[in-house]
Image 1 (cartoon, helix red, strand yellow):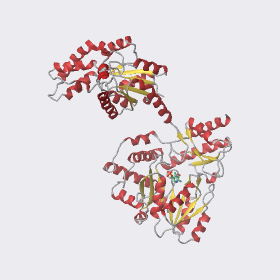
Image 2 (cartoon, helix red, strand yellow):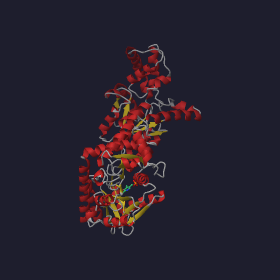
Image 3 (cartoon, helix red, strand yellow):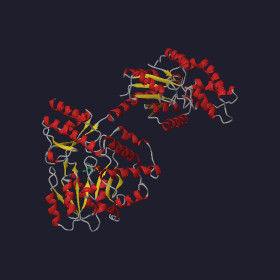
Image 4 (cartoon, rainbow, N blue to C red):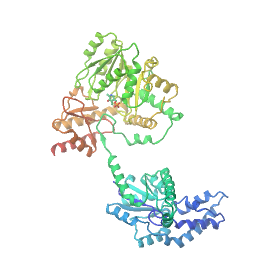
Length: 610
Ligand SMILES: *Cc1c(COP(=O)(O)O)cnc(C)c1O
């Protein structure tokens, strides 16, 4: 929750229109023989006054101004300012009431300023006489650098004991103020009426025709917006409702652990990797893309294979794989024991591809001998397709045995390894897997929006013309990505791709597959053992259960109530997908650790006890 509001002084809380410094700056430059306009005097408003003087000097077109002249002008400015400052400490309308309301809500009132400490001594005394006194005040000359540097805000945070800058709001009336808030990592709010940006006295503002006032406001608003303001308000009275909205947003964005099969909890570093904007065509970006594809290939395959990235969720990659490798002469045997298997059948059907589906019990792994019988029965079948870990239930299907069967009969093997890739050892060349599909947001612990297919290059090369969708054309995507040196066919999800690069880097940093697999196993063990002690049992027999996701009997529990309770405690669970028995599912993949699992089990225990 927001704990402090840090106000600027002149133009925000006192001195409507921020008038005090203007006459001083104009006189100062007059004194060195370069008269300036009021606009020039105002433009750098908010900075430490000597920096402000330098910024005006830099804006003078007529001639270069030496540092010596700047110092001379500044001396004139100071003298002028000190002479008039006291007359410019009137509190801006609604400030006192608003500050009172904020304090009543438990917020601290901080402040920063472009004035020096000597100036602030005067201002503080006068403002206090006028009824306004913040809890803390620091001037620009007390920190290494004034605005737009964030140091003054950070001093406020230090004073108030606030560790997270997102728990403070900076309010100001100049572009320098907005930038200071952004640079500090706070919420940055711009105020329009009374601002230096508009540059009107209260009387001038009142006298201005409303259309002209509106135009001035709009210009100021656009400047605040461009500087990165989170909120732009008409006057300070809107602040409490802005803070209420920010508090709601903070609550919505509270840290939580997703006990789901994807999208998953991800590391901050993965999300931060998204902060750079890249262009699809950029050489640097294309190199990043090529290297990422090579890295992904290396996790499960060798140089005979290539990774083809594809925009979209995992299902897009599955669809591109199935339709891309099912040519006119092909017919696939779909072995299914869950919803993801069914989804593949629907995909084949809609695409008009030849297939037979052999559906079996969702709580049991696929049966190798039944698959063998199906292959023997229909010699037209050219490929075997199945899901490795059926996320519907958490059943792990017998990958090696099914591959061995298919290979022994000379069939292609295509695997949906969405939820098992990077969590199980999948030796594609060793097992003879022709292609697999997976996505960024499962066990690689990246963000959703990017799928990929890893396939034998030879197979990709001969897959031309198989696709029945223009955008999900795996062959075309492969050609463009590899011949174009890492260029996507259509707009690339650039930020998501950068996040995936970081996720892959983190995967290796953890210790690669062995370490990740060990962590997931341990997560899973703690979960299953812990819940078993509470009488909550999995539906899949332990020997067929994956360490990815587990379906539990819901028993007499109400899912919605359980869900809401756990969410309040920071854990998000998943509904079951079985139609005949009430169940719920818990994933234990993502940026989740044994300590999280222990906490979850404790929360379950407390919930059941209550
Ligand atoms: C997550 C997942 C998919 C892809 O589902 P999307 O909703 O498209 O991300 C496909 N197969 C399995 C087994 C999955 O776990």
